[in-house]
Each structure stands twice: as structure tokens, then as C-alpha cells.
Amino acid sequence: MNKDKDMKIVILPGDGVGPEVSAEAVKCLELLSSHCGLGLHFETHAFGGAAIDATGSPLPDSTLAACQGADAVLLGAVGGPRWDGRTEMPEAGLLKLRRELGLFANLRPARVIQGLEALSPLRADLAEGADVLVVRELTGGVYFGDRVLEDDAASDLCVYSRAEIERIAHVAFQSARRRGRKVTSVDKANVMATSKLWRRTVVEVAEHYPDVALDHMYVDAAAMALVTNPRRFDVILTENMFGDILSDELSVIGGSIGLLGSASVGASGPGLFEPIHGSAPDIAGLDIVNPAGAITSAAMMLEQLGMADMGRFLAEALGKTMLGGCRTADMGGSARCSEFGEAVREHLRRRLVRYDAHLELVTMNRGCCA
Ligand SMILES: NC(=O)c1ccc[n+]([C@@H]2O[C@H](COP(=O)([O-])OP(=O)(O)OC[C@H]3O[C@@H](n4cnc5c(N)ncnc54)[C@H](O)[C@@H]3O)[C@@H](O)[C@H]2O)c1
Ligand SMILES: CC(C)[C@H](C(=O)O)[C@@H](O)C(=O)O
Ligand SMILES: [Mg+2]
Image (cartoon, rainbow, N blue to C red; front, side, top):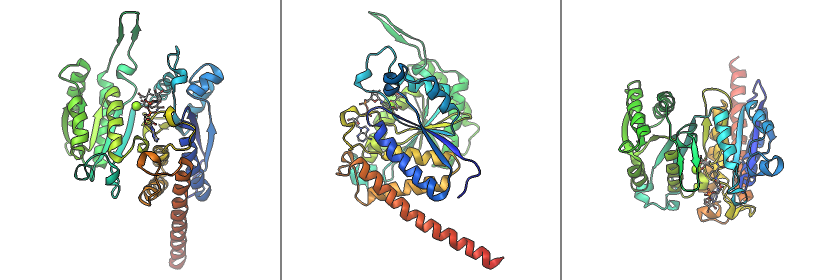
């Protein structure tokens, strides 16, 4: 594959395990890019706690400008106890980046890999075949409402407009069309005004998708059903805070939070690709973190950049690595983060050899027929 245009990928390693997982993902991308002529160019920028230490800000202007001028952004993770309680924490940089890039849709797929059901904490008969996509609204709700913190009282305002709900609902219904054709909208409409508007608006948007089934659940019941009956879900459509919490819960059905990647996209401009886990300070620097979520995020990035085949090769190499028994400690194995990443790349190299042979055959056949 030779792309017409070079692509700029901004890497934000961040804090804790962020640099470790993003390094493995980047090495996979470099391998694909050099082998297949994808024209990916990588630029690393300071972000999060590391940027606070270097510049005083978690999202320096130069980092934001680089992200705005990129084709895609790949992030490790931010935060850690070292910066807890600061006036401006590393996490504030992440929220600002999502907002500045207009990344209102956060897609978090989770599934139990066939053959790895035993790694799920769920009973095998419950885990088998579970495959859920969380579509999380990412730039509204309580994350972005006014906050007041006084000595004896505090408040966080939760606001949603109809337009914000409509656009994320369209993303969920369109995703369902490519998957199992069912959307479960999760809210707290028995209590919250934002959830009442959410439910009403989702019902209206659903009229444009008569081929997609829609049901509604309260978030507390959904939290239970995710671990008692995950197969009842296809696409979960939910607001910012509920999506944050439910996706961490959902991540463990496959065996570990370390498995999940995510894509955050807006109406236009670069997407942001990041594992859903945090900076895992308890295991940072030990080379034992699971980089699968970061590698999955890189595969999602390739798909979004129009290189779906390459994304599929990377996702397949990741699956083969785990099915072949190479697993990090969180998955019950003993592989180091770097060993796991290298095993993925070895599977990728083998896949690319077969791909080259296929391309050669196609070229030869064309020659014969010309
Ligand atoms: N997108 C992000 O950058 C992001 C996401 C979540 C949390 N955070 C931040 O990360 C910091 C730590 O948060 P936390 O401890 O609540 O959550 P966390 O996700 O970092 O860790 C929770 C637990 O899961 C384990 N874990 C996480 N990822 C793993 C992986 N890939 N492989 C193996 N084990 C893994 C950790 O060791 C820890 O025991 C906080 O500052 C938080 O705000 C950042
Ligand atoms: C670090 C934090 C601000 C972030 C969030 O709550 O969105 C994280 O938990 C996530 O899931 O990406
Ligand atoms: Mg989270």
C-alpha cells in the first residue's frame, strides 16, 4: 500500500505506564508503516503530569497546536499521585484536549475473545460471545459543567443540550447498523432532568433508524446486567460520566482493563486514540503493564485513517499473541510488556509476508490477463 499523502501522528506518552504502552503501540505502527509504505510520521509531545513538570501546564500550547495539526493523536495515559490535589491536575489537560478537538464521541469496544473465555471472571456460559460497544458522549455533562468548591459545600453542574444528545445518538445508531442492530440507551431518567431529555431525544433519533432495535435501561440496572448477562447488549449509548464508569466495569469481562482501546472522534479533524485504563502508578516502570489496549487503539486509529486492512492485521496479531499463550500478569501470564509487544510484532511480520505473497500473486495474475 502506498499512500498519496504522509500522515502526521502525534504521540502523547503522558505519565505512569503511558510511555510504556504507547511505545509498544508505536513500534507496531512503525513496522506496518515501513513495511507497507504507509507514510506515517511520528512526533512526540509533552502532556499531562510530565508536561506540568516541564512547563507548568498539562496541555502546553505547543502540544495543543501539534494535535490540531495532526492526522491523529495516540495517547498513553495521564495522572498519578504525584500531581493529585494540584490546582491544575494532569486530567484537566485531557479534558481540555478532548474539548478543543471537539471529540464528542468516544467508542470503547469490549469482547470476550473466542478461546480465552477462561480468562474472564464471568462464568464461561455467561462470557462466551459477549461483544459490546460503549458509545460514550465525551464533551458534555457533569465533566464540563460549572463547579463550585467551598469549605462546607460543593457542586458540579450537569448540562446537556438536545443537539449534543442528537449527534452522539446518531453515532450509536450508525455503529449498531454495522454490528448487531441494537442500541441500549443507558440513563437515570427516574431521577435526573438531563436523563429525561436524553431519553426523549434518543427516542426521536431512533425514528431515523427503523432497522435498529432500541431499549432503555437505568444505569444501576445496566451495571448489574453487564456482569450477569453481557450478551444482552450490542451498542450501549450513554452520557459522559456513566460511560466512564460502565466501560471500566465492562473491560474486565475479557479478563483485564488492560485490553480495551478507544477512539474519540468529532465531526472533523484528528481523532484521539487511547487505552481506557489510567496511568496505573502501582505498576509503572516495571515493564509488566499490558499494552494490548494501546495496541488496540493504534489498530482503531489505522481504521479511522482509512487503512482498515492494516488495522485488522494488527488486531489479528494481537489476538494470536494472546491465544498463543503470551500474556501479561493481569491476564494470568508472565510476559513482560516489551516481550508481549515483540510477540505481537512477530505475528504481524508473518502476516505481512503472507500479504506480500498475495499482492505478488495479484500482480502476476494481472500480468497474465493483460
Ligand atoms: N485516559 C487516561 O489517561 C486515564 C484513564 C483513567 C485514569 N487515569 C488516571 O490514572 C491514574 C490512576 O488511576 P486508577 O488507579 O484509578 O486507574 P488505572 O486504570 O490506572 O488502574 C486501575 C488498576 O488497574 C491496573 N491496570 C490498569 N491498566 C492496566 C494495564 N494496561 N495492564 C495491567 N494492569 C492495569 C492498575 O495496575 C490498577 O491496579 C489517576 O491519576 C487517574 O486519574 C487516566
Ligand atoms: C482521567 C479521566 C479524566 C478520564 C475520564 O474520566 O474520562 C478517564 O477515566 C477515562 O476513562 O478516559
Ligand atoms: Mg475512565
